[in-house]
Image (cartoon, helix red, strand yellow):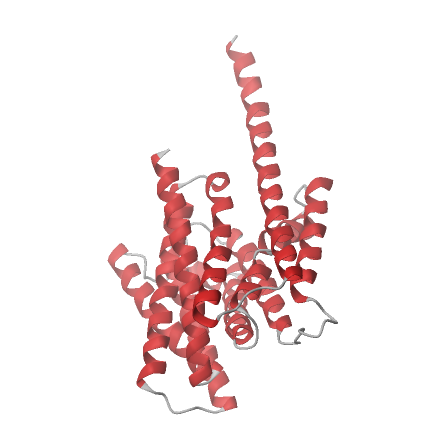
Length: 301
């Protein structure tokens, strides 16, 4: 129970930190360029994660860094970073974050299609309901719709790919090493983007927001690792939706952003479908455990 409580607290903290990183990046992008913000934020996060990894003895060469899952994860992280920060420049932070809540459902569906994992009709229906919720958030065809919203969808797909690839990485590859390399790759991609699109003069204010975004991003990653390693997935999964709460609060207090009625309905559907899918997975897990225990009990008797 104490480990679960630690994990829950860490996951809630991770959501707050990562939303802070996005909110700070949203401000920095408005004053510089997308490439500069991504490069600076990634560099700061890389330095922090590298320092933490050195303290833990995790920063060392590992042949697993050249494996396909790690390479796919890094590429997906780059795509997610560029897409998400780009989306925040053109749409409310709450709406963009709500679309990201579709990630667990997309990951489940993709695992069923790509890795032949068993997914029942109930979770397929939850996935379809979540897709409908995303459409309500995007509101294609509505007057307030912007094609930039599709960047949030791109970020969601990239993050789903990242999570799938992460699940296939050899467990001997240190977590902080993966995080540091991924952040470094994102920073390098930001430099390339800035070189193509051009650089803007950096002000002390934009630098401060960029550095703060990098610190928050690294803190969120570390908190997430602590949560994943200390608690049961079924215990912490529902609390990952606190990320959406932080996004709504930040959007309202910082920019006066309030989702419209259709977006609220979409947010509720996405969160509800995700919670149902998590609950269903927990039920199936308990059934599998009971099925494994029964033969052992029968053998003892």
